[in-house]
Length: 139
Image: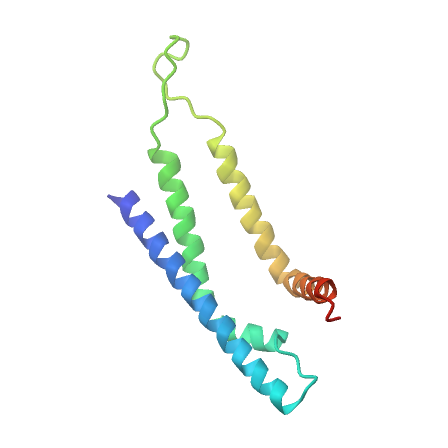
C-alpha cells in the first residue's frame, strides 16, 4: 500500500512540476518580450528573472526529490527477485546491481545539488545560449 501511495505522489508531483516549469518559462518569455519592446537590446532570459520565477518551484522540487528517493527505497526493498534454481544459494533472493543503480542515482543528485550551489548552473546556461545562438547564426 505504501509503495502505491509513494508512486502516486511521485506521479502527481512530476506532473505538477512539469506544469509549473512550463508556466514559469512562458511568464519569463512574456516579460522578456515586453522588455525587448521597450529596449531592443534587452535580454529575455536573465539570471534574475529566472531565479525570481523559479523560487515558487523550489518546495515542489524538494518534495519531488523526497518522493523519488522514497519510491526508489520502496522498490529496492519490495522487489521480488528471481531465485536461482541451481541450488547454490539455498533460496536466498539474488539481487543484481540494483543497489549500484540507486547509489549512482544518489551520487548524481548530490553532485547536481553541489553544482547548482557552486554556480555551475549559470555557467551551463550561458554556454548553452552561446552555442545555440552561434549554431543558428544569431551570435
